[in-house]
View 1 (cartoon, rainbow, N blue to C red):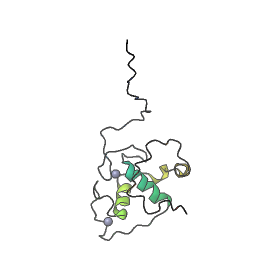
View 2: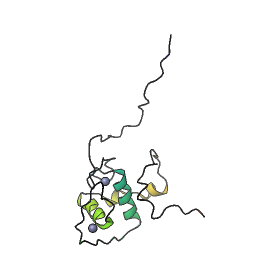
View 3: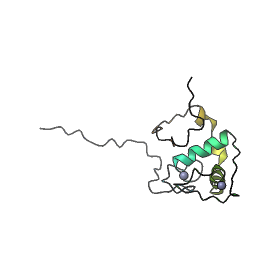
Length: 123
Ligand SMILES: [Zn+2]
Ligand SMILES: [Zn+2]
């Protein structure tokens, strides 16, 4: 007799899991519709950070940058503009998200390549 206990732990709370939806901003794989439209984690974080820190970005190409998955970091001004254009809702951002996220899951790959501006300066 062999006890097979190799069942895939598929108990992640399925909150709508948009498996095949795309980010409205950069066409990456969407992570959720947190702020009203499907968006990838990178754009969600970018949007939230931009709003909360009240960033004023400047575009060097008169707002004509093409934001795609590979080039979404080239211009923050245009990226943020697209966030608004596609209908991301700033009022949906809660400051609680920043202070202490209750649902922490897979927080490792939260756009580590983009968050090097104000990274932790531990000293
Ligand atoms: Zn995106
Ligand atoms: Zn631009």
